[in-house]
Amino acid sequence: MPPYLFPLPTTSLLTFSSLLTDPSGSYTSVLSEATAARTRLQLALKGVADNEPGSSALAVLDAVQVYLPYLKGIIACLDADELLFRGEPNFPWTSALTHYTLSSPILQLPSIHSEHLFVLLTWTLSLSNYACSILDSLPIFEIQSQSQSQKGGSIPYMSNEDEKRTTAGLSRAVDLLCQASGLSEYIAENVVLQLESIKKTSGGRIANGNKWPIESNRETFKGLSMMFLADAHLTAIRKLLLPVLLHTLFSPPGPPLPSNHPSASLLAKLYLHVTSLYTSARALLKVNQSSSISIDTSSSSTKKLFSRDKPSVGIDLDSSNEGEMIPTLKRYLKKESLLSAALSNKWLGIELGENQKSQKVGEAISYIKDSLMKLEEMENSKMKDKLKGLSITKGKERKKEERKNRKSRIEREIDDTRAWLRVYTKLNDTVAFQPIPPVSSLIAPSGRPIFGSKPFVPPQSKFEPAHRLPGPNGEDEEDQEKQTGKSDGDGEYAGKGNYF
Figure 1 (cartoon, rainbow, N blue to C red):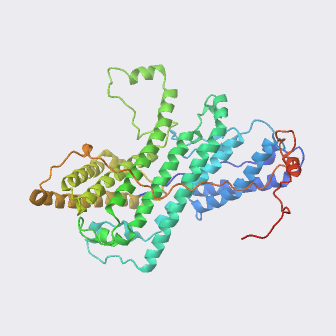
Figure 2 (figure 1 turned 180 degrees about the vertical axis):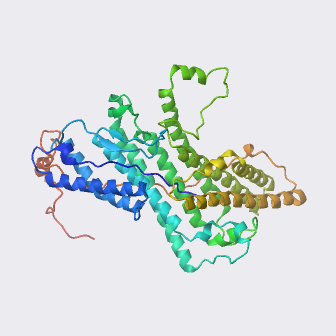
Figure 3 (figure 1 turned 135 degrees about the vertical axis):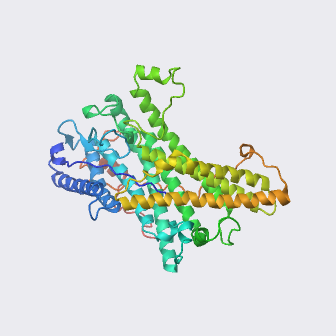
């Protein structure tokens, strides 16, 4: 169940005093503080990778937010030529999203902007993982299947305290995922573009002959932004369905809907929007895969690809060659897009069938049949077996629990969809006698978003260059401020302090 739990990148120790030279001697202290802040981030990431006690996505978030202001100050001073590199800079990072045949190598990335990119990548993935940890801590009765509850024993009771805790956790997770979406958008529009000239100069390769990871591509962060927003909407749907949760889990599947159930029309439009987001995210990530294939495929392999002897040979978009998106993330996007498409059709059918003013039982049956077909394909296809290896969590018990949750999630939807289809089919055979049109002939409404990404506001730099770069007229910015009478300090003006 969303959100996806990401692996995090890792890095090696680095000392800024050995990487940079300070001609004025003004930044010795802050460079030492920057090294300490980066070391803290490196240890937090190592702790998560090694599953050390006390390690968490929250600890990584704290370390990133301490280090980033120092990094922004270093970038500003490099741009102002007040700090200089001693030689060709290399920033060691491992990729979190790029697939490698063996273990992920340490990539020696050139340019301070590569460091900036991976720090922000760490931030956005940690936001999603923190949301995942919050949702994992919610009461577990939400994911129990009906078959488990029918085996005997007491049915879990949702107290007011549990409901408040669950509501707060879902709201917090939605906020974190919206932040991750906005941050990914910011990276795509502002940070990745600064690496384009460097990538072209290097011929698409970095030190040791490795290719640039897919995290250096704009499409990757565009796709991640849409994925995070889709995860946020699915989490919001969970919150929307919380008042009818016990009815959903422990009442017989199918009609009638309880009086406090959210509108079927609203749920259909939300799932339609989620489907479009996941589909767009998959399309953007396929751009990375196809471009990688076109670059790395030799002439001989190209002949094999288009050979008449193998006309059906294609590229499995759910598996990955080296240098492409990790396969678990591809499978996650495929599964969630298919499931949300099936649920959107289910709720479109229920809306048509339950609408007393213009009851269209035939169209309702068409939508629900298509939904059931998609759900059964998901259950019976090979993708179900692939989903068993979806999680990248530590611990066998956690993996077994998540496999059980995914299975019950689809099975519950199949049982419920079959019940609705059975009722509407009987109604149509005995009362309505309406024709059942093909689902392709029906016009579905457009999806409906309920929120958007949260715009990312970069933090203030920990320090600034002592002398700013010259302005258009050759003066420093400080001189321009003095001449124009504008500055960031407190100025005197008429009516100061009198606000109405």
